[in-house]
Image (cartoon, rainbow, N blue to C red; front, side, top):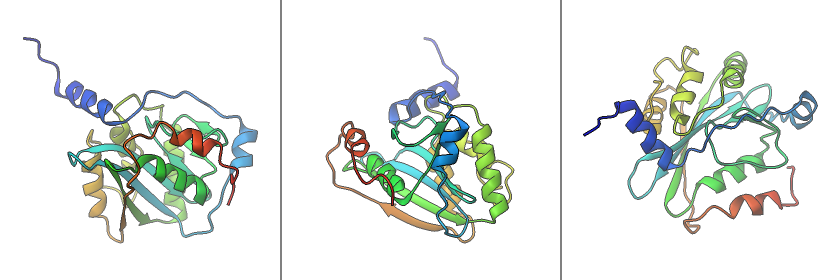
Length: 207
């Protein structure tokens, strides 16, 4: 019998849970500047955790970073939109509608999404964004590890681990002072393959 290292077993399991592969897209400066979206809200960092309703296991992890602009760090994610410029695992132009698109894509009858928002200073929000941009595109199954790496050493997130399990990050976020939590559910059928096509064709591209 051949034994594989534990980290390989964990990575394989997470790959099956919903994380996608490596994306090496690098949008030009002009596209990134044109897509820049400022929400006008207080700076924050939001952890998004997709949970399997049948097993309770974590299926995916991402960060919504709202500071000098609002971006989405979606390591090894499978969501995309043709109007959003992307660099590695970072999407620019995350308007309220685009955030709603993202949430709708990930929530259905078999999956819920836990949204945990932590208020931060503008400096911390900028630091998290720059660290996300500096990350190499995440390999399949490494969404939680990559997210933990982005937050590692950032003031206010000292207790966030570099862990393979999205639930470990979610539990660590729950202990951060001032965190606000929301659970998002949807009774859509257990298929999201057509959601991207519908979103791409939506005529309401801006808020």
